[in-house]
Length: 67
Image (cartoon, rainbow, N blue to C red; front, side):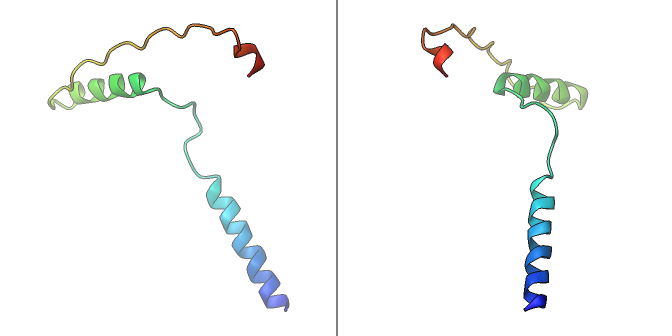
């Protein structure tokens, strides 16, 4: 029974440890990702993707305060 408990704790520790892996930074919007991809293509002398359209400015909504 102790081997099973130990194995369960080890597996739980591994799962928690692997769940924490990733990039610690704010998320990129699709516009920012497209601009970055365009800059990287220019640096690497590759075909440049089309210029992304600027996103529409976010307008406040009356119920935003409730969220």
